[in-house]
Length: 70
Image (cartoon, rainbow, N blue to C red; front, side, top):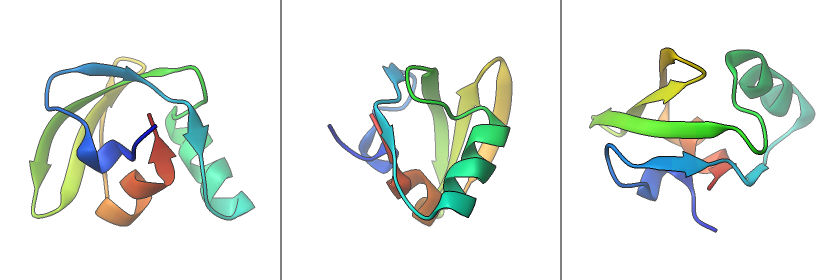
């Protein structure tokens, strides 16, 4: 298991765990980051991560990406 920030660009990964406070977990879940869901890193810009999740492109901060374990 590793944080999303270490994922290879273009490779599809399965979310295994989401860490952080309950509010953070709920926010990520609302964006489509759910355990068992697929996530693909599209690009990283200045530490921020652009991902494809549930056919949507979402930009999240490095801090948020480190809470998502793949």
